[in-house]
Length: 93
Image (tube, rainbow, N blue to C red; front, side):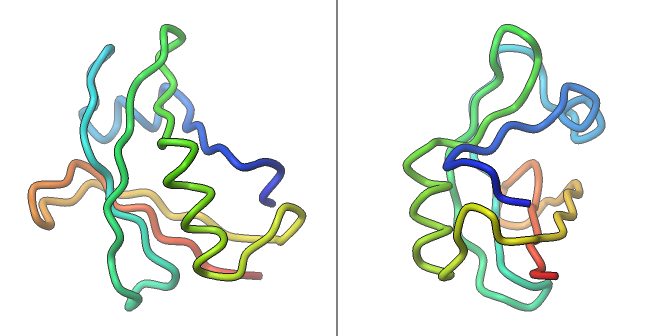
């Protein structure tokens, strides 16, 4: 469920995607597996969690008409799509 206008991923997910501590880069995010890919910056905080840029995540939610409280299913996987390290796929429930 979307509970705020920021997105943080657990350290174990970051590690499974090969994201190192203190790394910054770009992740792809899309609504449904066939939706267009939007690219957003990410960084890794001191606790090892990966976070998407707050402005980017909020913009994605607004553009896709998703709101805090909306139930979603998130799939995160490694990718080499356009030089991205990870792809985040959002499906509504």
